[in-house]
Image (tube, rainbow, N blue to C red; front, side, top):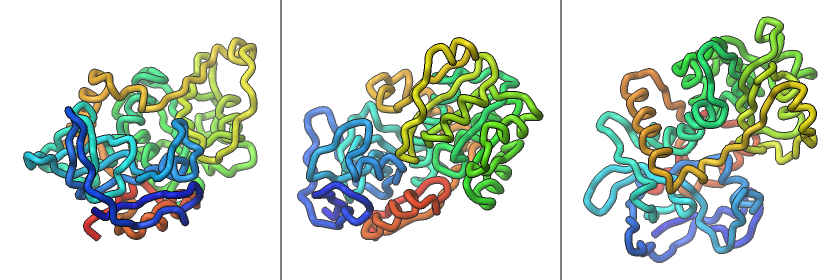
Amino acid sequence: MRAIQITSFGGPEVLNVTELPDPVAPDGFDVIDVTAAGVNYADTHQAENSYLAPQSLPLVPGSEVAGRRADGTRVVALTGSGGYAEKAVTHPSAAFEIPDGIDDATALALVLQGLTAWHLLRTTTHLQPGETVVVHAAGGGVGTIAVQLAKVFGAGRVIATASTPDKRQLATELGADATVDTGTEDLAAALQEANGGRKVDVVLEMTGGPVFDASLAALAPFGRIGFYGMASREEPSPIRPGALLRGSSGVIGFWLAHCIGRPEMMHPPMQELFALAAKGELRAVIGGTYALADAREAHDALRNRRSVGKLILDPTR
């Protein structure tokens, strides 16, 4: 089979097309004939071995695929790794049958990034009706879903941040009530101004560094940050428990990997996401489909913030 294989860690240049033996599924697992593979920002960390889980070489990256099982059933599945290939292995508990009317790209937008957005709002920050939600990186895969879900879940106001006017316009089209340039000099003040002078209740944060620091400063009493990534590759300033005490605020980390193996945390949310998409209440933003051989271009677009929404690899090209 054709696959992208990494034999040394680094940037997009380490993604190479190669011929590999077809994978053999262990007992209880399935081989998926891949029709589309998802590309996530986390994959760029996987390629350079800066991800939460240490990687080993050689490596076929990619944590999600859409395709068909041997019985012909269309599924979207989480794989951990191995997704950038014509065939991938997954466990049935991490696979979801794709309903009629949902295409592969939409299913891929929902399975990892959609579930992450769902859990950030429901499980991690426990969004309450009427609360203000800040969605950082609102033009990205998680962000485009989170803006919409926050409105569906009853947020009183959604403030979206993004680095370009086009991405901020997209966030507005998806339902954001206000937008803020992530690069503004005083981000904490800008977030508060976008909320009518009041501090905010919930922040979904995946940038790290100064953006995290500003988000913490912008929290109202009982405010919560759902922290799920560090795209800037910069650590935030150390958090002093006393500061959380003074603000009655909280910072809660989230990694979808901890939901895998807990079917009650995976299948009901996925069914809700499928249903919202089928009713037209949730739009998957597809930022581009790349041939398998162009995986480097997809990673370069992610790392340089040129992409929006969900990026897809087509292993048939």
